[in-house]
Length: 439
Image (cartoon, rainbow, N blue to C red; front, side, top):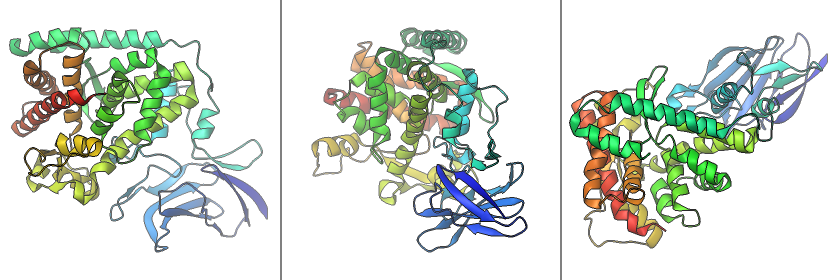
């Protein structure tokens, strides 16, 4: 007989089992989605982790099997479509911006630390490993954080990141503002004044993209990092709150700080990474890890806001506009239309607005790419507040700027372009209507 202690998800479980016998431990304290728990079965050669429902004590389809000796994953089932569950691995956080990829926040964060040379490029994290005393450990975020400095990193320089971003913006502007004379002049004007801040990126499997708002959050972080992180936490720790209602109404925080945080919710993932690296430099790795979790929560909270059936309606013809993930409960979102009317979504919660008619309190847009609407909202406010451009010109400028960059990455599909036009025009109009309520 031998004793082993397993460090699983922050809890130490002492396990007693025979070398050749089957031992079963119900790991009730192992981190699991709300309403579920992990069952753990240990054999001579394998560890089986299975996710169970607390409500009916039924086993889900989600399970992970590890080799006891090498700590490697032997097999896994990461999805239960019927229960609408996706898990990258036990003890890890699903990347909420793109849950269909089954990626974890931990792996994204590890990549950032390698980019900053705080981890060796070949560093890998086994899910299971033996420590120096021969005890069994589950590798989690705390183990990763123990390998790197907890305090700000003096040999790294935030200004170098900002300078690099500025160079990438300049390169992208020079490359992409030449495709038509009608749009190029406007693009050159506002891009030179750091309004769109575009950077061309390429992600595996996603192809070439142009991402926006790559500089402003970094500059705001450099000016007042503590306020920026407090603002990020304010939105991230408020489940199911409409982001634009927070932007307009959270007057305890500076407006430009709130605007910078909203930029981080527009699926421009390069700025998310650079922002987190900047937090590493200014505040240390542990603060950056919390920042990365908060960024992840922004996307989860926003999606949770629209998930209840009372918050969306079904429009079946939209299904053909967007690619399938092969995950039925995520694919359902292709048919969602959401009411983004500011009188209902912003004025109602903030000021108790009520209308005797339905005029202008129902404005429906497809949910799947609603971040373009958020981006147009941000762009219009910057054109108005930062550049002083008259309101009458802003919606058309927002449309031309947005459509110009979208044409370069999405092509000329008529359905897609029609939707993009709706996002940009409506976002700009709504931003102007709300600008007088900014506090």
